[in-house]
Amino acid sequence: MLLDLDDEVAQDPGHTGGKAAWLARGRRAGLAVLPGFVVPAEASRDAMRRGTEAMGRRGPGGALLTVSSVAMDVDLESAIMDAARALGDPLVVRSSSVLEAGGEWAGAFTSYLDIHPEEAPKAIRGCWASAFTVHTLDRYAAADLAPGSIPMAVLIQPALAPDFGGVARLVDGEVTVTGVAGSPAPLVQGWDPGAHGRVSASGIVTGESAIDLMGPDLIGAVSAALRTAYELIGANSCEWAAVDGEVTLLQLMQVEERPSLVVEIPAAFEDPAMIDLARLVRRFPGPLGEELVLPWAVAAPGYFLAPVEPLDLDPLEALLEAIEQSRALVSSAWRTTKAKGSDRASSLVRGLRGDETERALSAFAGLRVPDLDQSQAVLRLLETACRGLVAAGAVADPQLAWHLRLVEAIAILREGRAPVLKSRIGFDRWEPFDAAAVIAHGELGVGVAAAPGTAVGRMCFVSDPHDVPHFRPRDVVVGTHPLPNLAALLWDASAVITTGGGPAAHLFESARALGIPAVTGLDLEALLGGDPAQKSGQVSLAVDGVGGRAWATAW
Image (cartoon, rainbow, N blue to C red; front, top):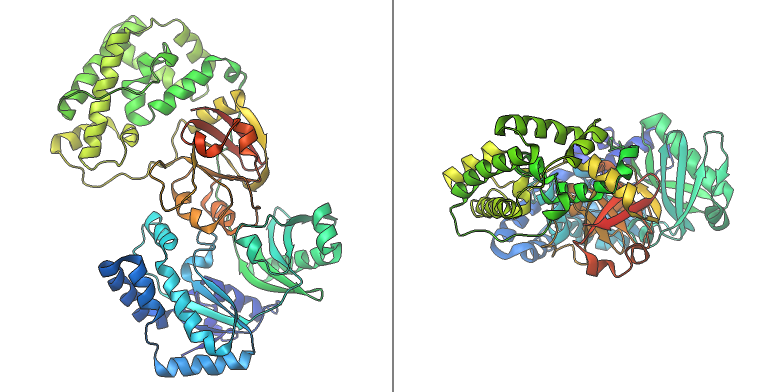
């Protein structure tokens, strides 16, 4: 009915979830992990089913109330009370979902601190209910998972009153130890940046603020505990607490950072024309932009950035007419036949984002500027087609339509409806080019590295993660603090920046697991010359998550 952390089966995340399974492995290996017991995931199935049914009738609030008050099996509740009393008072009650085996879902579910044994059943129901909070439901949607579809185990252990607490990570032989006085909760929740120390492979401790706060001996002890965990069970990340200098491992994890974009800045990117070309490929991205706009618009990229109004025309008719007129513009700009012009233009446009940047720039400089009236007509035809694709259910926003293939767009408009909504666009092949242009010409701001990699995107300032109608896939998410309720946006974001908090927050753990570059502690108001909230959607940001830097240009 219940599983002790020392039971062999407790090491199976299918029964005990990711969090408890890692700690069970740690105890088996002799690591400094507290004793405890687990309510297996199977025990939550009825509550999850009832929550899902209630959500269909009454929404997330109804699901929360239903699961929070669900009747627990009498024998199970009695066993929980007995086991809880045996552990002592107070206790900590924590979710342990199989989803929490990696960093992507860090901070998604609820934990309860300083719980009395008689309160344990209520806290367990609270952990189950956290699968139906609004921000957790957002994560389910982002990960294409059905709400309530993953049963949840719950871990109960003695509570500590730590002198210090924090997180630690082992990367390339060096351990980074981040800590705060007291509980690590404010640190991992994103409110406190913490003090950062580093311990080299040879044991040298650095980091003045961390040494002043915790002392070199404690930092070294945390590092040693994590290195031992890595050697014995493969964990390279932990949450820890220290009481009277003794380190306890509260959470263990293996975080595999995904490979991320590395941007090189060739000398050609110093050309002032690059910034207008970068803005052009942002305005007309994807296969549609590369086929129908870029081949002629590169002749005068700054001319075609303004929004245009659609025409009162059938979207399919508009798209087919745009194809013909686009070919005529290419022929005129390149002073050749439609077929030859299209082939040469396509080759050099590809070269612009490849290894023929200088050759492409030289060729573009000799092009004939397209007829402006005809150019505007083509853009209005394409805007009509993009809005038609929204109406057909292909995409949620006209700007996303540019990421459809031409044959795909024609088929959807011919049919009048799309087989499935395209809500994600993934990595765009123009992003390295765009990032290089922004880095070469943007204003620089320096913060603290939080997740490695380089990315670029439109700045989207988020004050309410549950109300972001202006967010588009591949935006750079910007907030004041790295709070867990921003995490659902990471599945579709290119990067994340916060002005406050620190790199030890759960949000950045999720970013590292998802391969999303992140920077924290960045003074965006100084970088942008004004309130970031007022400039949302108007700025392009390139983010360097290794150096803790960001560059800004006009979108």
